Image 1 (cartoon, one colour):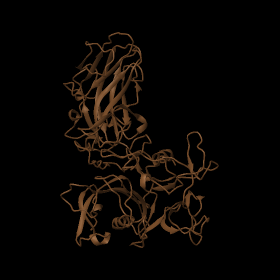
Image 2: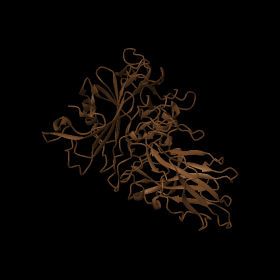
Image 3: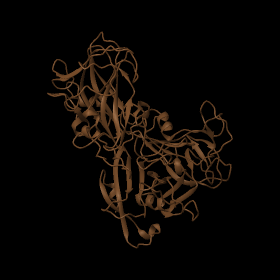
Image 4: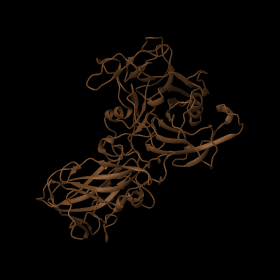
Amino acid sequence: MNCSRFEGARCAYVLLSAGAVGLAAPVAHAAFIRSAQPFVGVTHHQYIQLRGDTTTLPIFPREIVVNILEVDVTTPGVAFRMQPGNGALPGEVTRQTTRAFVNSAGAQIGINGDFYDTAPPYPSQNGQFFTDVVHINASDGDVYSPAAGGEALFNITQNNVPSIRTAGAAGSTTGSGGFSLYNAIGGNQRILTNGVVSAPNDSYTNTLNPHTAIGVSQDQTRVFLLTVDGRQGDYSEGMFTTEMASLMRDFGAWDAINVDGGGSTTMVMDDSNDSTQNARVINSPADGSSQTGPGTERLIANSLAVFATHRAGYVPLPAIPYPGQTGVVPNITQPTMFDDFEGSRGRFTSTSSGSNGNIAAATSSSVDTTYSKSGNSALKLDIVNTNATPSRMQMRLLSGGGTAGNNLHDGKAMGSSGFFGFWLRLEPGNDPLWVASLLDDGTTTSNGLERSGFKQVIADGEWHLYEWALADPDQWNNFNAGNGAINGPNAFLDAIYFSSTPATSGGPNWSGTVWIDAVGYNPFGSVSVLVPEPGAAGVAAGMGIAVAIRRRKPR
């Protein structure tokens, strides 16, 4: 039985007998599997065993979180690329994060690559760090790291034929028997051979760790990219490589290798279906992790990228709560209007905040039917400056009083991908004005406040959309007790932040009127789908369908 094939289902999935993974109990057990299809030909599976789960019995005697990307290599638009070498620079590669490589390549998926020398005698140059990889590696036919000698490797040809092979003798640039390599990565263990677990019985195999593995189906039509999180007690403690091999086999792999793991284990996806290259980390890196959240990406040697086409109607899998987290709510899974100001000020009922600067008591907001972007009315915000010294104008227009629990929508909150935004109108002749958004990132009971980058408000009397990609860390900064990124599991609108300078302090004194309308969130892409253009009534925004699929970026 393989109920992971039921797209989007959350099911009890009987995988292995306890004896198959070395447990004492002779009975079969089960675990939660959740699946979604972010790209055409790609399925994302989550395999979850968490403490306190009373509806299933664990296969393994510990908490485990596994992410598996199942890639159909016969699907048009699917392509692979191993990170290339660094040419004339020191060492074989320049260290970077998996997310940085995927974004620079314009890809949609990435996992960390090969083991590498952690203490290379190379000087850093201009903030760059160099190293050598341990095994054979090739990018688009260029073998930039020779074989260590007989190691297992994953290779996929220019025509998308994947295989698990063996490298040639030490120093060679081919597979055993002269097999040419195109996009290839070597590993330290062949953990699955012809459907049989083949990891050696050694200390590496028998130590619980985070791991990354690559598998290929028997008919060579599917590639499996797997990360298992580890070293995070009560969330995910890791796996033995024999356990990982058994799990991959039950998902459909026939052959598989283990690549670099530990703090290097990383899986990323650019699944927001927008025009911005903004991959997000979807596993929980071990470095710097805690009881309340994931760690940070490591600068690693190289990564494997996958190119694919976004699938319409995709709903991201929800974040997995950490043991120290309470107050986690479901994520919004369709484009949602937060406030349209039809007959009321919605959640924006107060203009008072301790973060305001030089804002007079005469400042007020009201429903105005003179101008609107959506419906018949908008929120009119009249900002009155105190003209105090030193000059400044900063205004934090709170939503729901700035309390996360007051900013739920049918009991749900934003996730860590998609776009948040709103429409503004400013009359010509106004002095320069900037706007940002403030989001509470975390849960209803524990969160940090993140600020988006500032955008200048266009003063031309027309409506303009101001929005930010939640998955792009370059668009977010710590405002108070945050971490400069939106990584959930939930996000809540705290405020719309206006400033007379693109900063949170200073600037000239500013007074004027600005109109706000159609405040909302789209987990798939632009918030513009919430306000269809005339004649676009057929757009199924309320059904969670994105209006456009982003074309695959050029490689």
